Length: 422
Image (cartoon, rainbow, N blue to C red):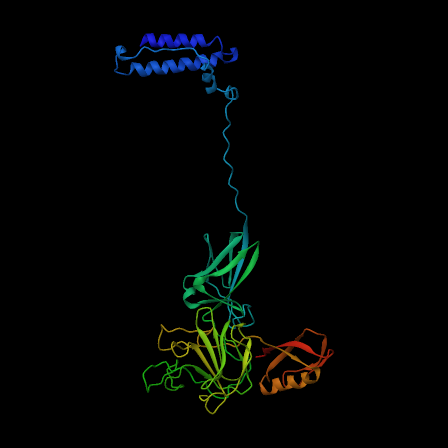
């Protein structure tokens, strides 16, 4: 073994003749290191010297491959260790959340609609939470991005729907899509249900309502309040209103039916986001057609008394759920704590705040038509505001039936809103 080592040392010595002077110390040091390592390995081995073969070391022209192990760029040069890139802290924006009870489902906090304190709010993804104060305000610091906003805690049991606008309804459990782009205030309109009354503010109901029969037993009648203001197996709510009353969509959705039925007369059905239908029967005319999207408060028809099942009095048969297959009373059964209310306010259906109509009329008919609307549709306690696509001047308007307008163009498309003055 000693002979092998001495020979290897000699061979390394012979190599120094063709190694550049600047490399000799490095190569010789490398060779000695190899030799010392090899010697140590042998000394710890039980194999005897006689069993080791005699090494043969021949200097060849391939010897320079030894120097390829150490390249000039590696001599005296240490590869710098890159410092870890510091993690940047995201910019947090201040988002003020404003929660309120949206009675009419239009997404705006109107007069009389209370702010809601004690509402637990949570933005996901992340852990951004707040609880609103007595003024309905809750603040979170949150990075920019897209989030789902949820109501949690006890409030989620009372308020089951977000009502962002007249064209949107979202279940509390589905969250509300919010995009945070900076410091901002977000309005959060909440409702117990999502339905509003299917006719305008100020409409006079000439007789008490006839409710859904919640008792399925034949011959036994019971309404939601434990009374008998119903008849056996009645599937909807009858609103006794004058012929000619505009009928409004009780919630946003898509028209899935607009037709004449022998029993129901002119009938319209609107499918809502949760799959339930609102059905409007005995209409005089149908304004919307199958496939149209409608918003809350949008006029869809005019009431009357058409169809074989209409009875002696003009009325709207308003049905919720399905065509008798799924019986759903929009009122909560007062005797059953587990029953569901579907109106925006528990068992207290609200009018849409603003009723909007659009039409196209020649100027000679405008004044007469407006008087007719106010007189026969019983808007005697309503304020009328005009928004016009063409130039016109309003001569006079009052709270009762005297409404006139002068139109400067030959034909004008106009819009007017009825707002309750109570």
